[in-house]
View 1 (tube, rainbow, N blue to C red):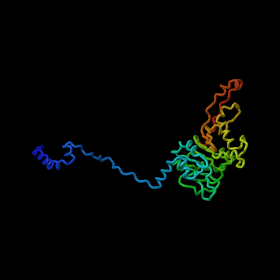
View 2 (cartoon, rainbow, N blue to C red):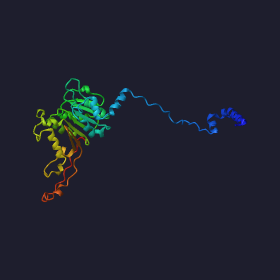
View 3 (cartoon, rainbow, N blue to C red):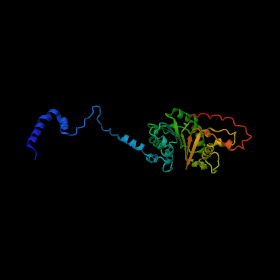
View 4 (tube, rainbow, N blue to C red):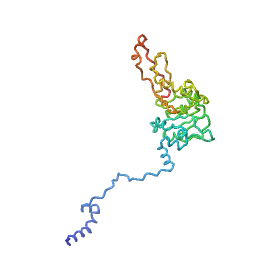
Length: 306
């Protein structure tokens, strides 16, 4: 049984002592854990501001794969062709970088006021990049934040130099989706590849026209004037230091193409310094036994894109 005297004393203490010391100290006197005290320096947590519909949609697009973006914007880079998985493989490392991407050919020629689907796709795949489109027709209506357009020929040297001079970041990616005619593709590469930054990627689409005489190609697979003849020369040029013809003078592409990746109707060319050296004179000692030692090879001309 409880002691009535003790109970009366406790009740008296509650009535007299608790108002004097306050509930926090009274709790300590009773052995109860103290209530947590908020530090004056600790800021109150506030709820994150809600995203607007436009912000939410932009985040959704930037989280998509390139194939999903292609389907969303309606570009034929996936569906009619199957390029996007290859583009993602070779360009994924640039997704968070600031640079300039130039695509030749904006599309939308069937109906007036159409085009720019792939430029919009690139804009959301590369959220920090400047995207530029070049087309023989006026596609200025495609312009938007981080998307610019130029009108003119893909083989106009002055125009290509102007575009590169006016770009807002290093030219890291070039995509030739223009006329698809081999003579234009070859000349554009000759003009534009030297303007590409070292470490950049040059892509050529729709190389099937190499085999179509109606598009400037040839039924002769060994015709030296086609797009694929250019690609085959670039592959040879990767190994130009192994040529036994010592009078051979390396081309610009020989010294700056470091990789060539070929897919169905699509080619990627990587730019860098292709001057690793060779041991051919020691391995082929008999061939070079009576040959004078070669003079030091001149350093390759600096890349304008550096």
